[in-house]
Amino acid sequence: MESIRTAALRSDILLKTAEDSAPQTPPIIDIRPDERAALMNTAKQLMLEFGHYENPEYISSLHLYAYQLLPSRLARKLTQFSTDFSATQYGALIFRGLVEVDQQELGPTPANWRMVEKGKLNIYGFICSLLHGAVPAKPVQYYVQRQGGGLLHAIIPDERMCYSQTGSGSRTDLFVHTEDAFLFNAADFLSFLYLRNEEQVNSTLYSIRSHPTITPDMQRLFEPIFKCPKDANFDQEEATAADVCTSVLYGSRQAPFIRFDAAEQLYNESANQHPEALDLLHRFWEEAKKYVYSSYIPQSGDLIFVNNHLCAHGRTAFQAGYKLHNGQLVPCERRQMLRMMSKTSLIHIREVTHPDDPYFVMEDHYGKVVELTNLPNR
Image (cartoon, rainbow, N blue to C red):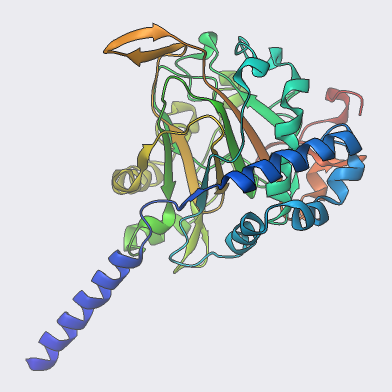
């Protein structure tokens, strides 16, 4: 009897230890004024030397510039972050006050991302790319999903898509998701730089590491039985899920990676999930919702850096172009955010990139590659 009690006590202690060590919130790193000034000055010097952050000469040597020019504390944190897949790694870093944003120079928020004056974003492209270079990774463009976006993509509320589950939406919560869960070659790392967030919209994050243990139900998420249609950026006919099925969890059984999109896999009827798969997804989502972190409201100049294999992201609903002032909604400049995506190996994605441009990803859906005749001249 005593041995049974001892075993039960040991089990309780182990569970308590797991609960205590499971990360519930991302680290917030406050950028010092000297680091911010050095980073801005570095970006200005790179602009003078290379002109544009997409300059191939700059991008090909990005890791060297990152290690040489980034403030050493930031470079160390990103380098450590890039290879830490442990049970205590949340999978996201928040850099608070990373850059100074000149709101007057930025000007009014455009109606949508297509109308952005890209020259105004050039300096931020250099800053974001340096962070990705420290991982080290190379920024890439996912053309099919973001035609015309380039390596740095502006995310702006679009009134025509305000109820959609996309970055252009606003009126509904954007459910947490790993970026492009419907691709075999989704980005490894993401950065989200907030140029303005006057509406005070909460960002949401969800880490698979926040679960103290991988339960038997979660173990079943390793089975390749789940479908994922393309997101609401595509027409319904285009977005329909292929017959391809994948797992939601993959990698280590004890400390797994995740590929998950709550909106598309659970609530998009075109997913045509098998009933058993749908039941598992609903049970997982009910548990996962307990661990969604939604307390952080990014301010102008903040940046969130995410490991796309560990951490999903989203945001709360808001009314674009209005902020609360003295208990009343008053007009304001609409939210504007910049996203950059990167891969740690261009070799491993070569079969889905343009023959003449290794940074130009042509994957459409679960390994399908768009035809060259449908692409612009490179």
